[in-house]
Length: 292
Image (cartoon, rainbow, N blue to C red; front, top):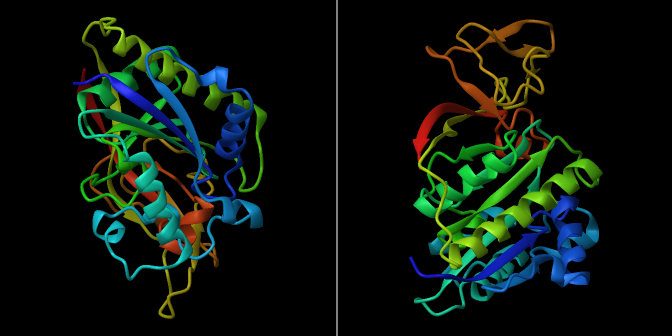
């Protein structure tokens, strides 16, 4: 693989996720913090209009606007669709023989801790994830169910990841999570610099990826309205095992709805506030052991 020529640190893909926004602002003020000798570091505030009004987005979710066919569709003309095309041109502008890496910064109201979402299963991304877990053992690695034809900003480059941290409320800064995210960014930059300099990777090892199998919606009535909540015994238990017949939802009249699967799984993004509109109560994952 060619040396990595540019690392893009992106914040504010969602305008009410302040950790990434204020890290980008900090790096713009103190560029030496992200400077490394072997590559260029750039920053990008992805959705400035949404940030200005304190909302997740203006017209539509920017982080669902990067399908290749949508980027080519001139008929899509809302603010985020146009912004996605601008971001794509900015971050994918290097010649093909040169290599980009993208870090997309997010927060979640779910109890996800420090989560790395690799852009692809490229060996470099897996090595990077393993390295970040070695630096901070609390880091979890999550993969969406289908990264092919992805709508996410992280799909702009084959190399890189999203960083998802929580739990933190929308529109709120949490100093502890801010600092932990910042340290992960520095670790990524150091790893890229070491790679470019030819430093050998650590010895082959295994680590766990939480692979998304499916998303589950909230139970709904005949009018399509939610009629049950996340069960109190499941709330804030992201990455913890749930077994068949264990409580998953609680209806408004007090009836327990159990998990109906046939095997132990690991829910994540449990009760994420931004996913109510998407019909997602949680993402169901299974553990996969990966050799790097």
